[in-house]
Image (cartoon, rainbow, N blue to C red; front, side, top):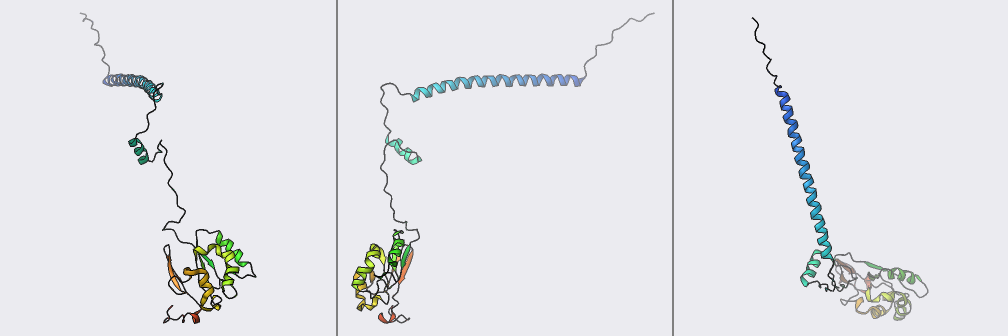
Amino acid sequence: MTSPSTDPPPRRPPARDLARDVAVAAVAFVATLILFFGFSTLILQSRDGGAGVASATQSATPSAGAPTPAPTASATRSAEASGEPSSSPTSASPTSSSPSPSADPVLVGAGDIAACGLDDDSATASLVEGIPAAAVFTAGDNAYENGSADDFRNCYDPTWGAFKDRTRPAPGNHDWQTRDLAGYLGYFGAAAAPQGTSWYSYDLGTWHVVVLDSDCGSVGGCGPGSAQ
């Protein structure tokens, strides 16, 4: 007796092949979504950008015959506060050439300055002239030979006289050869004895400058117990 023939049951794919197919389908689906959203975004940006350019062009172009509005006070103040230049003209603030209080002072000078038979005073005066903002001092023996009124007028004044208004003088023994320092005091005036004596002190910026008279015999001595 012959048994009836039976077909073998259909072979089911292994689970591993099924998982791979599912993964491939998922990747393809995600890629499709990314492409779709990417194209949609580009289309929207292109449309919005074109509208923005058109709007900006229309805003920047004034209507024919329309007056240009003047800047308001608040707009001007806003521009000044932000550091941007204002469209309205402003007056320039005056600048000062004087040194700031925090700057170091400059003091320039010389001694044995002027003698009518020499031209050294012309050379040193040229140097001082090149420093116009400096305070000027003298270190004595300002006008040879005797510090007389004529010596100051004829020998000192033609050169160093140009700085007289900014000079803080000190006397030397040759200036004392004219009695009572008369030529020196007569020429420099109050600047030579601002405190009533030939020695004095003053402030110059952050400095305190002390001027001494080294002709000790003429000023009652230079020792610790002297008036100077």
